Image 1 (cartoon, one colour):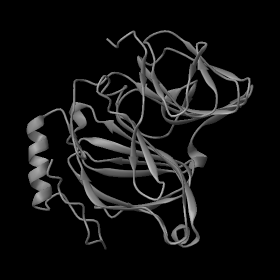
Image 2: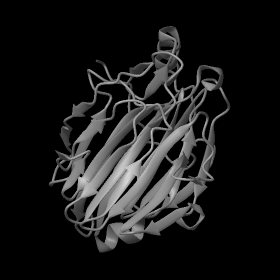
Image 3: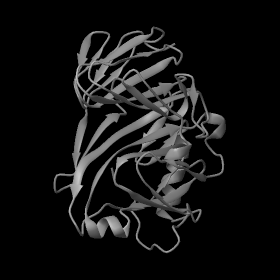
Image 4: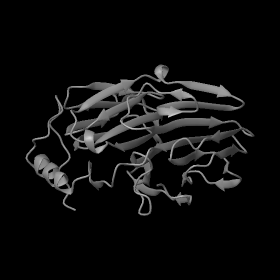
Amino acid sequence: MSDMTPLLIEPRLHDLGDGFTVRRLLPFRLRRHVGPFVFFDHIGPAELPPGRGLDVRPHPHIGLATVTYLFEGALGHRDSLGSVQVIRPGDVNWMTAGRGIVHSERTPPEERAAGHRMHGIQTWVALPREHEETAPEFLHYPASTLPEREQDGVRLRVIAGRSFGLESPVRVYAPTLYADVHLAGGASLRVPGEHEERAIYVLDGDVRVDGEPLAPQRMLVLAAGADIEVAATSAAHVVLCGGAPLDGERTIWWNFVSSDRARIERAKADWLAQRIGVVPGETEFIPLPEY
């Protein structure tokens, strides 16, 4: 059963240089995961001047799905399956690593040349044990395919899973809550207790959760079971995530996630030997860390 006590998570800041900051909320020492979400990064917002962009060299994953969702900017995805896809605001890139995949993420040439603003969320979803060794797969969902609803000053989009009577076409492996919510000043949203594990992250704005203030760039893991009210005293932007509890703990080492520690060691050896895969057209890669 999930803990009935709410928990506030402060971000850990990672400065990538030139004012580009990533805020990491999950995993947290007191809360390793919320539903299937084992990793939650808030990217930016950052202004990238002309000539500058993101260049995440090819790197491997196992046992998880990466979920990329942007509010601003663009990011080019390439992987060892041969997938090539630029993601733009409102789209979803869902990459199932399963038994192993390699991918890179880079700013597309047009945005790199012109300069642009980058802002988004990247999460990792742990795969259920029965799917940890599934075949790798990449799926792209355009923004126009995601269900939205706007009512009484609340505009929400279901990124993945099912919530608020809407269901995303994004294929998930377990009951999932993942929604992007904008609230006008004075608006409120009741979040039902249908998902056992839930968290709310405030990107910006003045927000109260059941009457208590929740500052921007903070995540509140909610108590299980009860409906809660999210109210905005100014225009606000929040993300909800969670779902069914994981079927056991996971080991997270670098980019590898598994219920079996020995599987992590095999993945390390496979990457050292370059056995997981290569991204067509790319020769660079991120070496295995020494920590």
